[in-house]
Image (tube, rainbow, N blue to C red):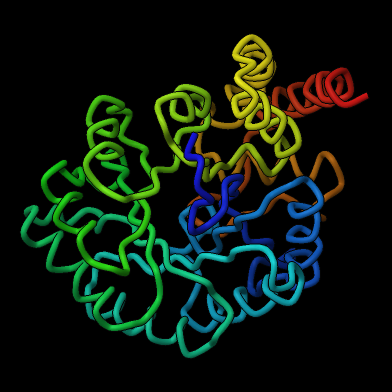
Length: 305
């Protein structure tokens, strides 16, 4: 892990968006409570309005209100990033400007444009148009499994030369390429794959932006500390203790649905509803998630008692 403090923090979470029971409005009271819970769990970075936050189904007005609620809940000492990446460059620019004018976000998360599959030159032009429009630092998000295209090494190197492009959330699984980016650029690399947090950190990622850390924040922080202290054996044990929970949340369908179910089971959220087309998990999946949450709570108690 980097010896210098990263721009955005180390222990990050892609926060879900709670809705009212009818799913018509954002439940700002539940959102504020969740944000405070995440800070209490040790997070120093919260990413709002990402895909985990159901950004495809929230309006720009809702997104800006979400940022205001989270900022008020967490205060000024926790970094707050705002998702602004879409597959419409003009929309992304307008949203980024609105985010900057709102004054609640410390930076932007820019997911690769999805579905339209631009060329690498198109991807670079899209990104530069956004970061040139505002004076906010940005974290790129490389997730070809959803976007359909990767951010190739040469593109990442070129984009890293822009002063506003400071970090990359990596969910491509190519650690060799990421190792070259760590070596060749000043980008802060973040793990965007919950199952691979330990190996990412081991090769030089500065932190994580996670879904499962809605619940595993304290254990993740202990793993960070173990690596900083060169206690690889402890880091491995902590990593192993997360495996079943990560499986339950990330490998049974959309992680957003699963983590909302887990948070509801713990009483952190009032219900687990997601806007269509996501909905809620099937009863048998919910039962497996509940069992994994209960088992994880026992594991956490063993490591923190």
